[in-house]
Amino acid sequence: MRLDGKKIIVTGGARGIGKCVATAFAEAGADLAIVDLDIDEATKTARELEENHANISIAIKADVTKPEDVDAMIQRVLDKFGRLDVAFCNAGICMNVPAEEMTYEQWKKVIDINLSGVFLTAQAAGKIMLEQGYGSIINTASMSGHIVNVPQPQCSYNASKAGVIQLTKSLAVEWASRNVRVNCISPGYIGTELTLNSPSLQPLIKQWNEMAPLNRLGKPEELQSICVYLAGDTSSFTTGADFVIDGAFTAI
Ligand code: NAD
Image (cartoon, rainbow, N blue to C red; front, side, top):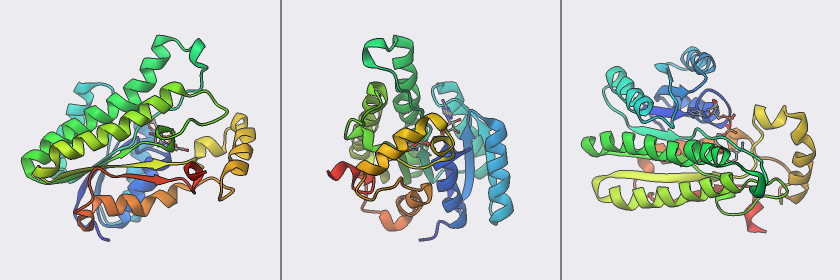
C-alpha cells in the first residue's frame, strides 16, 4: 500500500500516535504537514521525517480549537503542496476528574479539543476535498467512545470520543457521493511516551494489562497499517467505518 506523492496533514503530529502514524505515511511515500501546539517538537518530527525518508515535511503551529488557526494551517498546506489528499485529525487530550467535581471549563476544554477540534479540522479539510472531488479523512476516536474505562473518571473524554465516532459517520454519509471518505480509528490503551513514562500511571497500566485479553498495551506502531490503508486508494469502498484496535478489550 503506497501513498507516493500524497499530501497529508496530521494534527497532534509532534509526538505519540500522530508522530508514529505520520512516520508510516512518510515511509509509504507521502509528503506531510505536522500540525501541533508544540511547534518545537513538531519541527523536530518534520526534520526527522525528511532525514529518514525522501519526502517533504513541514511543521505548522496551530490550535485545532481555533477556527482561524485551522483555516491558516489548511492554507499553508495548499500554498506548499497545492492540494490536500488526506487529513488525520488526531490531536486530543485526556482528563481524569470525577464528574461531580468537574468544572464547566474542564468539561469544555476536553470537548473543544477532542470533538470540536476534529470537527473544525475535518470541515476545513473537507471543503478543499469536496472542491477537488476526492479525499480521505481519518479521525482518532478511542475505545472510550464505546465503553467506560475503569477506574479513572473520564466522562468528558468518553463523551468526546463517542462524539467523534458519530461525527465520522455523519460526515461520511454527507460526503460519500462527492468522493470524500471519512473513517475513524478507536484505539485501546496504547503505550506512548506519555503513558509509559508517567509514574502515576504505572499502577493503572498494571491493572489494564491484567484486564486486557492480550495482557498488554498496544504499541503506536500497531495503528500504522490501518491508517495507511485508510489514507490510500485501496480503501475506496471504506467510508463511515470505525476501526476498533484494542486487543479485544471491548470484546469482553
Ligand atoms: P500525546 O499527548 O502523546 O499527543 C497528542 C498531541 O496533540 C501532542 O503533541 C499535543 O501537543 C497535541 N495537541 C493537544 N492539544 C492540541 C491542540 N489544541 N491543537 C493542536 N495540537 C494539540 O497523545 P497520544 O497518546 O499520541 O494521543 C493521540 C490521540 O489518540 C488523541 O486523540 C488521544 O485521545 C487518542 N487515543 C490515545 C490512546 C492512548 O492510549 N494513548 C488511546 C486511544 C485514543
